Every structure is written in structure tokens, then in C-alpha cells.
Image (tube, rainbow, N blue to C red; front, side, top):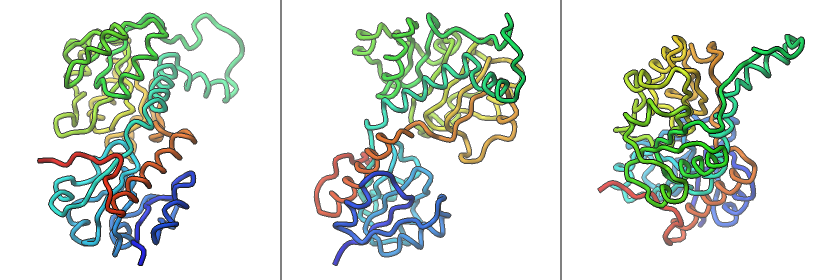
Length: 321
């Protein structure tokens, strides 16, 4: 008898077909996130769940679904999963690291360029028929070439973003949980504390995981340390930034702008953000290239299948002690 698995959203590429060769596959029939109750019901009797970052998989969920052996998250992050509850029940948790590094770094740079050069504002202005000819002060933005990039979290993605900065002749400063001598040697990156990085950087790009200690890492105090000409870029996790404090800093001109792909109460948008012209707001598309999303799907499927075959998955998440 085949193990039953739940895939909580339709995923791109051939991964679903590969799963169907070995397992009884249940796929979310809706083109939307499942509610918590729908997720729990569909997971009934399942040995594995291929989950999205938006799926809350907590202790009560696992209690209701005692057949679970593996939770394969279709993401690098896994803050949607209660790791202690999984460990208590012997459930393996996996993720998809590495595959989306370059794609997400590309998007961080798209936001840097878009918000720095006011691309979104200028695009809307042109589409609405306001463009009547070149003017000396039309949509003056900030230069990127030769400026200072502050990277908060020099992991895979942070390093990939920093490598791109080298092509813009930027000074690269960073803070991270540990120093990265190899990055310092390769890119000339300079290690700083967060408090010394913030006031020096022209563009601050966030690439730290969401942990209890990084929730609201960028708060009112640190936003007040930014240059009034500086920009904040977030392609990591929304709750890393205190969104109320960010809105106030943007509205008052304490900082020049922000480029966001993630939000504190995602998918809910802070009611003020959409009204602020000095923002570029994206719907969490950091890894959204055709090749990357299909590759992520295959890795998630391979992780799930390996556990149910009794093998070690390629990408297990380390569970807490």
C-alpha cells in the first residue's frame, strides 16, 4: 500500500509526477493557501507533507496527524514549523537551501536599483500619460555605483548580493553572527557591528533568518541611525523589520525609501505602505524564476521521498537540542 502525502499548493515542474509514481498524492485543489483547518483535514492519514512557508505546522497540527513522518518545506526558511514538536514526535523536517540563492540575490538587486532610481514611480508616471518631455529635475534618484552597501547576514544570499555589488564598485560592509574571512578576502568586505553598519550604509539589505532574536531587529532606534538618503531592502523575512517604525521613517523622510518583498504580517500589507511613493512593494517573489521554483519543487519532493523510503534526506533541518 502506498504512503499518502499532501502537497499543500500545486508546484511547478515534474516533481508532482515523480511523487505520484511512488505515493498516493493529495494536492490542494484551490489556487490559494489552505486555512489551518483545511490543512489539518487534508493531512489526515498522510505520512508526509510538502508544505509552503505560509502553512502553519505546529504542535496541535502534528497531534491531529499522528501518521506524519516528514515535513518537507518548499522554502529555505522553516519558521512556519514547530521544530521542537517535530523532534518530540520523531518527524523529520527538510528544506530547500542553496537552490534559490542567486535568484533571490538578483531580486534584491532589482529592488536596490528600482527604489534607488525611482523606477516604479517613473513607470507609473509614464503609463499615466504625464511624461511631456525630458526635464533636469524629473525623478532625481540616488546613484548606486560607488556607494556603500550594508549586508545584514552574510550567508549564501547575502554573499551573492555582495558579489554583485563589486560590479558596481561599491564599498561592502557587513554584519553577521560570525565573521566571514573568505568573503572579506574575496570582496574586500569590512566587518561591522550592526550599530556601526547602519549609519554608514547607503543601501542596507537584510539576509538574516527569522529567529526570536532577529524579530524586529530593525526597529525605531536603528532606523533613526540611517542616513536620510539611505534605503532599506528586505528579501528575507518581514518580521525582521518593525513595520510601524518603518512606515513612520518613510513617511517623515528619516530614510529615503524601502524595497520590500516580505511583510511583517504577510500576506497582509501595512495600510500605510501602499500609499507611500518611496517604496517598491513585491509579493514575495524572491525565488520566482521558472527554473528555480521547479528545482525547489524537485528538491522538496526528493527530500520527502527519501524519508518515506527509509533513507536520509538530502537537506534535513537540524532540530533543536
